[in-house]
Amino acid sequence: MHRFRGTAVTYTPHADCGDNVIVINAGKAVLTGNKMEQKYYRTHSGWVGGLKETKYRILMQDKPELAMRVAVRGMMPRNIVTKDSLKRLHIYAGEQHDHAAQKPELVK
Image (tube, rainbow, N blue to C red; front, side, top):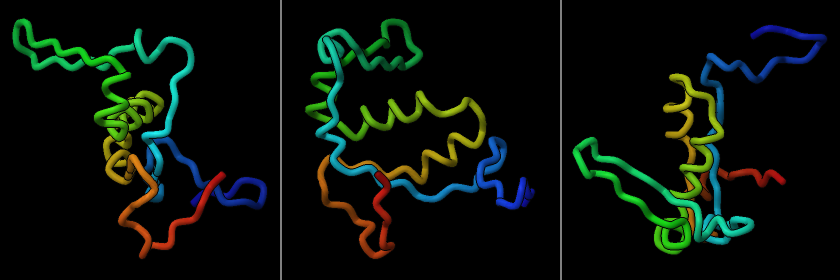
């Protein structure tokens, strides 16, 4: 680990040195403006005519975890570490989660 002015460096963009992240209450997330009606989640199968579009209003009702995962993925750098980092991202629509035994710390 490199030292910089007496403190340890904890972020390196090329190395995977993170913790698990637990996101609760993903179903309570809100989008500002008219994004619920104007924004689409799009997937493509690779086949001709394989484009599928879902409005965010429907996506937030049915799968808020997926909407949050897509948002977090869009904010992450485009490198090999991102795939491993997203494996440690746990998203839950409500307050109940399976990680109470690990004693998670609340970050505000």
